[in-house]
Length: 353
Image 1 (cartoon, rainbow, N blue to C red):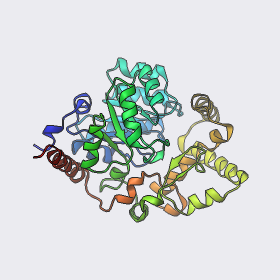
Image 2: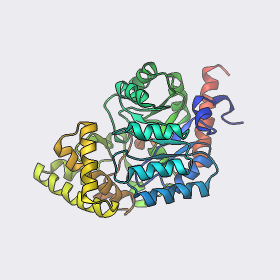
Image 3: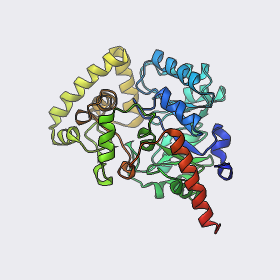
């Protein structure tokens, strides 16, 4: 059986067939993509970081209708309605909860009491140590090659650092798309890999064709890190909007951020008070500047323009550098099976078989 020789602590803990995680990409990791990933043998995370509580609850229920495999839910612990989303995660018995910024011990304790695994993503060894102190069961270590908000340490350096720093299983993220990469991650001491961009460019992904075309056209040099989207380092496919943002004045960026904040309020259904409390929590936990806090609403709104509305020139396209190596759009089942076959072939070569 494919993958029989590659069972790891990740497959044991999460209950998936293969040591592969599909990450929770905003507006992309829909119930349909998550279910397809899980049915293919990977472990999928549902994206709820931009969802209203009632939408998150409906999406969790939808995943359960589409698959009987275990899955996880990702959300921001400071987002409006976070307590209600956490309650839905517990009520529906998701296998895991993932998060990154602003972890809250009360939510983590709630998950652990319900037997839900806590799987945060980190970009530095010290963040991994703090996450384990707070109760993390599995760490996803994302190197600088990864898409969206990312750090500066390459995966090949970050992964062994994190493995050495903590005593819980570690998953590698950032730059993975093949079976050879899976074997490399295992060699570094990881228990599996997490992929976003590779699943984003699968057949079950909801990304509009016009937006997917921009990803396929990108080379590895076309996926830089910019701080002009929301004030934090974010890896994206370079496009017209990124060029415009990088050429904008501070006043222009502030005006755009205020417009995004108004649009986000309408989209989220949150009150001004809820948004202010969320912004203050994020500013304190993540040590953001006032400008970064104001710009925070830009990312979900501008990403939605590309990922939902299908206007890539006017939106943000979060991406790992690996987009420059991806040339096809397989189903999740085809993708996962191919990765596992490549991994076993690579392992066989290394073992002289």
